[in-house]
Image 1: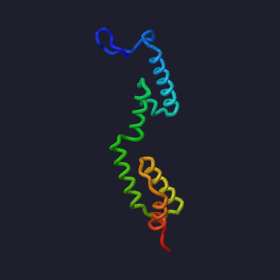
Image 2 (image 1 turned 90 degrees about the horizontal axis):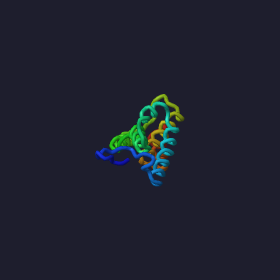
Image 3 (image 1 turned 60 degrees about the vertical axis):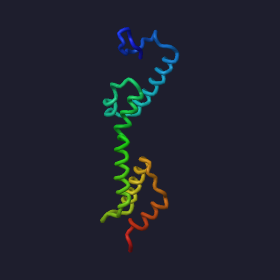
Image 4 (image 1 turned 135 degrees about the horizontal axis):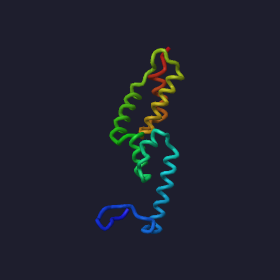
Length: 131
């Protein structure tokens, strides 16, 4: 980008670009290509008007992860679900373990790592039925 004679910011022409500008353009184009190749049609329609890979990345990140406040709230909600996790009536052990693993994986993706010992203790003391 550059300012024209009136002081308005406009795109540089190819003649105005130096080697560093061309290198940046090439890197941006490569990053955009990788980002676009990894998304579906719904996401593409959301980002097709953006010109930089940074704009695309930021939009996809907010769309899929949420803002930091949303991530914190989601982490708090998931941890509450983990703390109160119990075996639901009529469910088999495999379904319960799958639900438990999904919950702990979601917590891990949000940065809340639960130690293996804590998971095992939770399963043995709170989830499995006492016979």
